Image 1 (cartoon, one colour):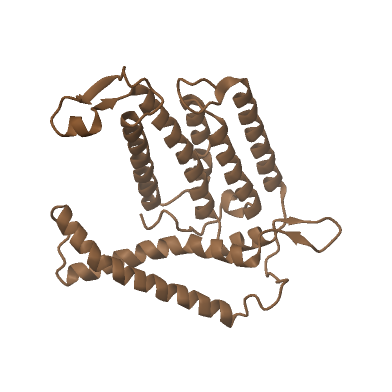
Image 2: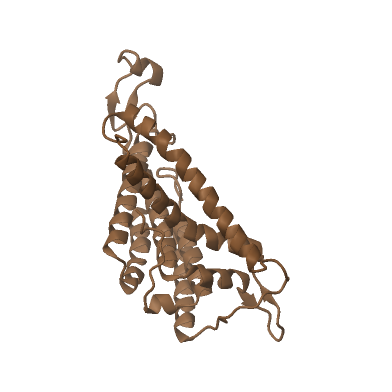
Length: 290
């Protein structure tokens, strides 16, 4: 899991793309996942991200982490929605798991039922999340935090001026720090778990053992993260962050041919999604129409 949010330094076409273009691509995939409402089209949208992963050539650890997250996501969404599907007919479930006449549990819940429509709805929602998360993970894996910072601050330049439109420096710094903070948090937790195991902490056993062990892991991890955050703040102050309103950057962002090709691809993709949604392939809840 530690490699899921980590940038991998490589020399690929995806790495050389302008970070602003990749941000627009992630936004486009998010829009596509919201517009489409059928499993087949959402699967196609999800598969459209895979060629970019093939270009990035992620490590085996990252692939395993992504597969684990996606598998858990699909199972969790489909399972929960099949049991708690509020738009179906409560009188006609696909089958009943626990009848209402069952002692205690049946009386408290009114019966636990399985709805096939809910499973389909859960699949749709999981595909939407997977499409967005997959594109965002590919963006993080191929974009250095410093490039992300420049892309957010200098997103669009007003023609014939030196004025750039983008998010404030503080928000851009916060976002870029958060992207690098996630792998640090995972590594910090792994180090703490290894240290606690070396001191005799037992993690095997029932739920009580794990909850008791979590108490010994949680507080050192929070202290470590606070210490790291303070170090980042001191480093920012030492480099005169926010001393001037207009910052200068070593690397200037310029669009090249591959960036324009990517922008055209995103425009066609989003346009196709809008068209498919407008002719009846959008929708949100199975059974309610589009």
